[in-house]
Image 1 (cartoon, rainbow, N blue to C red):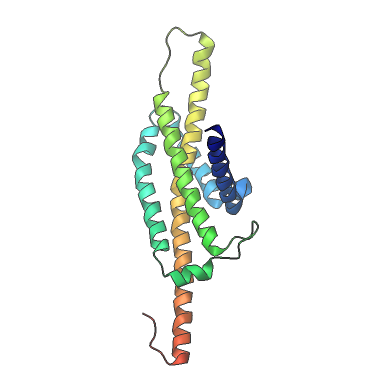
Image 2: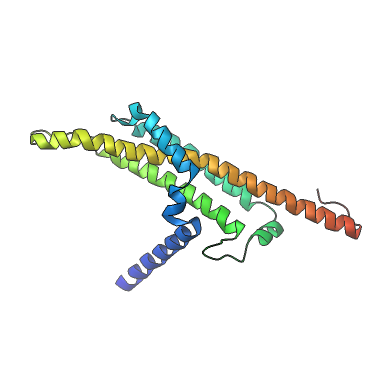
Length: 197
């Protein structure tokens, strides 16, 4: 039983590590324009996260974002299988295929949304004050609560910015698909066959 449990954990951790390598790791995260924009928006929204209650925005919005993400992924996966075969394959750690690059961006999007939702739920559940505690406790809570709010709201805003990233990923894959169809039409016209619609 223990061996099976350890094997299950190891397999999951290896899968996560594969994703993180394909995504590009922390360096890709920190230099991302979407993360930079999320930092700016978080600072501008100081009035929301500095006090308790910010988590209700996150809990209300994340399910809609998840729906968008899954719909976008479904659109991509429903494209012609011949097209998928062209953009897949030949991946390396340093240079993933367009197919794996696109899938890893959607996986990243879903993970960030999940982390934002879990963080908001935990923050909401821990939003209480213990009575009769020493003065240092209340002083610490007055500092730590806004810091925790800033972190949670940053994760949420980053998830929102990733909506834009996912939209442009779909746009980029649509351009690839357009090129693929154009090439099919050219090859059929050269062979005297009817064009692909």
